[in-house]
Image (cartoon, rainbow, N blue to C red):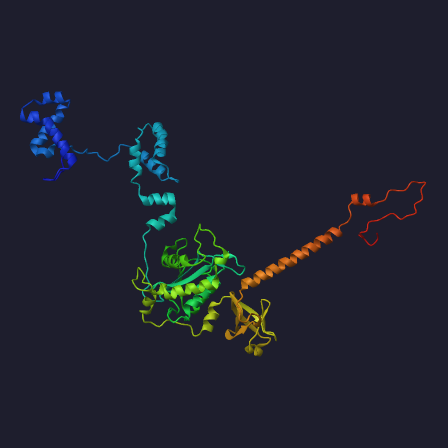
Length: 495
């Protein structure tokens, strides 16, 4: 039965087929040539000619169009064979169609099935659901990234949600020994405005301390007049890194009434906004700086590299003068303007000292001595300490700058004690630890050399050595007048 709509136009291929059949039927239709004679002359089946004539008289030229098969698109293959082909195609690594065709030949012969053609195997493999293919061959992680339905959350106000994360920058700087190293960047980003609330550059790997120092920079007011982002966020959204899930950060969140929310383990897509910021830093800032070293690039000479403070100054200028003033492609506002447009008063701690008490994680118990507080082999002094000699205090310090420490007594801030030896300079705990370690190595090397000499010289003589040192007995008829020579090395007191 022809399902063509009345008056539907014929395609070029259908028209060609219909005209060819009409020319074959023309002698019978116009000259009255019998169909049996026409069938014999053209080598066609009589039944086919009769059917064509009937359809032409009923439908005209459209009746001569070749009719599609009723079973078109259906495969006459056992369901088990189709599942076998699909299962092989979903293997890891994915085999070629030719390999699948060769593999099923043995099975079809054993089961008594007809061997499908290469094109049939291709037609079975090609329409397999890409999601099923990704899950089978790439794993659940890649599948989630490509096919999972996402819920994209956006904060409704400034400081409603802050995101925090770390990355190692593709740039080399000189460390304290003039060695090229790649620094780490810790960033706190406001989800609503995309503005950077605070950051921290360090040569040390991410830690709870770096996170706390970045939060300190983010929460407190900035020295730059154009950088207004500050305050305590309602939510801090991070990954499951140990520095973010530490007990100290949890306690800080309780103290400042800040909720901690963690992304799903192994699913970083929820932190896409801060990941996009890291790309912006690399594409707009790092690539123009000396020492830029993306993966696979040659290592620049040490003389061409900046120090970490130099990089920090340039990055801060980029954030305040460029990134915060640049129109964001998604919000269609600059980050600083979008944060300011809220017209709200951010929540702030009562003082910087209170914030330091909460965030500076390195806390040590010390006793105030008459000559000050002893810490890391250094002495820290302040006139306020005169009233607390002999008292137990708690000190908090920035490991990247040991020139001063903050002193607390019974949870109350006392003073900033200064190390006079380091006044006007900045020295890191890492430098002190490395210096101490190098000194211990030198002392241990000298001690090892001396112990080796002691072990060698005080070792008991071996029997073979004693035989060599013993003088041969003189002949019986010869008088020995001289004392036999002995070794010049005295080993025991009774020798």
